[in-house]
Amino acid sequence: MPSSTSPDVFVRWFRDSSPYIHAHRGKTFVVSFGGEAVADSGFPNAIHDFAMLNGLGVRLVLVHGIRPQIDARLRFRGVEANYHQGLRITDKTALECVKEAAGTVRVEIEALLSQGLANSPMAGVRIRVASGNFVAAKPVGVRDGVDFQNTGEVRRIDVDGIRGALDRGDIVLLSAIGYSPTGEVFNLNAEQVATSAAIALRADKLLLLTEQDCISSSDGKLIRQLTTGEAEELLKDESALANKEVIPHLKAAVRACREGVQRAHLLDRHIDGGVLLELFTRDGIGTLISRTPFETMRPAKVQDVAGVLDLIAPLEQAGVLVPRSRERLETDIHDFVVIERDGLIIGCAALHVFREERMGELACLALHDDYRGEKRGERLLEYLEAKARTLHLNRLFALTTQTAHWFRERGFEPANTADLPEARRASYSLQRASKVLIKPLELSRS
Image 1 (cartoon, one colour):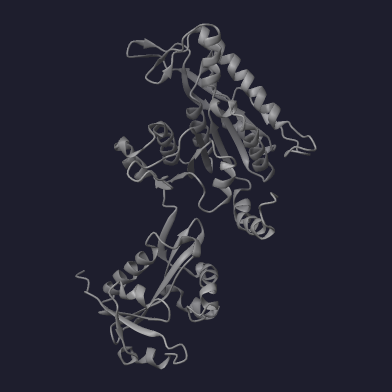
Image 2 (cartoon, rainbow, N blue to C red):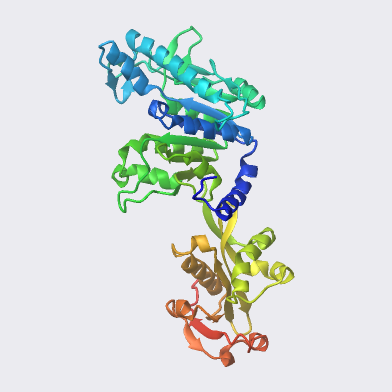
């Protein structure tokens, strides 16, 4: 543990990561990285992280690129690299360089995964690496009158062979080359190999380690999460992305999720420990693509009781909220709406209905400390206001000791306890002396 890290911080981080350690065990992850990453001086750290994932029970498939290594060999031979439509034209000389680069890089990665010195991060670790002819390929052929020769496309992934190796606890290593039934060798795109493998294996995650972050042109900020639909809309206007280099990665992620991969992650490979930060922290450090939203607001279920109790406990201890027993919360849980983020309840609020007076109480509005802002409180309020209108309530009220200004800014006006429904007046706590605020509602026309 670094001397700058206090024991409390380390223990909290370790505890916070434990749900992910359990969740990822036995899952299949495919990780793609370019030849640039392999050539980087920090690549051994990435290998240590991959070894850690293997040790934690993750079924890991690594797919490496070799483009810069091929180009370096071509330059050494005095041959210019030849591309068309972003694809390398792999002639006989280029193919020789492809074979050399693939073999060298594969051996280098296997060597790093074989470390076990006492003073290394992989001390005592014994990892087996499985590599071979897991990828069948076919030629790209002729496009726009250009013969791509030995440049190919993925034809088939040997799913049974890869799964057999993963079942043995091996890390599977795939190069950006493929083989045909006629014995030919084809130069492939590493990301296509990774995407095809993830789809064929029905992988739980596809991690694409990129040279650039997925940055929005509008505000210059990292795009944290996208559904496949949102990503497709974003790709229709490529000017919306500050770094055009991520476009192929984003397309690959969308394709993977559309064809069965649960989640795809775009990660800047320059961030030391980026894979661990993405997988073992709730918000991660990259861009998440999934078919369904990563964060959702929905009606609460009985299964959410424990999460809501954990969320409101600090506010109850601080006197902001009235303490609620588990029994009471179980009884009232269907009055609640929650915001769930990757399995964690980060927000909640309740609407208690007083039908005779056609009033509703907005109660127990709470947000996790780490997720305040981004208008989550407003979203909870809007959701329950809409629900109140569909129930034909004409007023919404709140009792608060510390957040009256928040409600005032959102249309609530000061009122008296006499304005409360009779049943709520009877349970009003004089000791808490909560302020009463009421907001009139326009009824829904539905």
